[in-house]
Image (cartoon, rainbow, N blue to C red; front, side):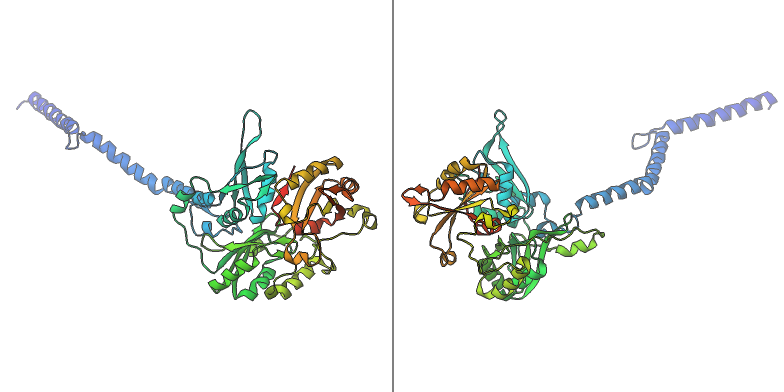
Amino acid sequence: MSEHEQSNGVFAEAATTEQLNSDSQSATLANGLTQAQQDSVDRARAYAHELQQTVYKELLETERKLKEDEAKLPLGTVNPGLLSGMDPRNASVMSRLYVGSINFDLTEEHIHRVFSEFGTVHSVSMSKDPMSGRHKGFGFVEFDVPEASSLAMEVMNGTMLGGRQLKIGRPNNYNVAVAQGFEPPPPERIYVANVNEAIGEDSLREIFAPFGDVRACVLAPDMTARKHRGWGFIEFGDPAAAEQAATAMNGFSLGNLVLRVRKCVVGGPLGDGMAALDALPPGAAEPSNQQHPPAVRPPQQVMDVVASINKNIIGATTTEEPLLGPHPPAHEEKEEEVSRIVLLVNVVGGRAEVDDELAGDMAGEGTKCGRLEKVVVHIASPQELEGISNEVSIFIQYAEPASAARAIALFDGRWFGGRQISATLYDFDKYRMVTSSDTMVFIP
């Protein structure tokens, strides 16, 4: 074979090999891809797997930690439902109330103040007319815990406020939220609200101890003010003790406030209570040194304990002075202590003569003397009647002491419906205690 033929043979063999390689790369595999395309896919998968083990894994871990932090409840949370893992949306619905038949002159601030004695009010929203800017006479009140909303509904439904009878109910999606399920409440646990800020967990435990063994007493802490928020939970060793305590102590006056007590609605862990404050850095707010007036005489089974606690709260204030009745004239007090509360007695003959318009009528007359903040019709309890002769008393709360002084001149000795009215100034702190559970209230 000549040299020229050998050279042609080499080139032919190389061309054949190149053609075979090209044919191999362009051949269609079973998955519809060529070998070249498949190789590219394999390299991409290998690169993605490498990213998954490095960069993506770090990103996913960061995202997971962020979600955990968002779901983590704040320090100091006292909410058995949320602490047990309850859906926050369902817990919110169960803590919400519909409030209807609201006086059009009342504001969200008025509603917030009235309902706050049942627990921390998370929000108040009132539907407003876009044309007039006034509310439509209804709204929603949301508390921190379901127990507060249940307690408020039991007490406030049908209550007269601003001359109108409130209508309290549940939002439309309440049954849906309940159907989602939640941890059942322990029968030995009760909810307590409207607790005086001077009464701590140890004192509250001591007050309820006569009903039975108190296993836990937790008050919800205010992590900013570094004091309790006025409500919490008490757990006994026996369900019967909890039942008795809820019945006996609901409406009981302690440290110038009326306790609100009921059985629990949702179960779950109680939280750390006031102990959560220990985790905060130094710099706690100074405790309040406000002096409080004497409480109404407590039931026999807790009388000794409460008397001791009240003594610490009120200092040297005597407990022998009657809550109702005339008080020293204004000129006997220091000028800065002149009261802005006017007590009217003998306006009506008894509770049978009290109607829904009485508070509003007195407010109409009282405004002639200055700006008034509230009018309360108080019907004395059997215990109060032991020291007074008038079953019905009317309190007018003015914004300024000068207005109260003018009201004394207007009302005292005046004849109303065949009766001669007696008007005197009344101590503000005692007024708050006496009227704390009254429902016939007019707020201009």
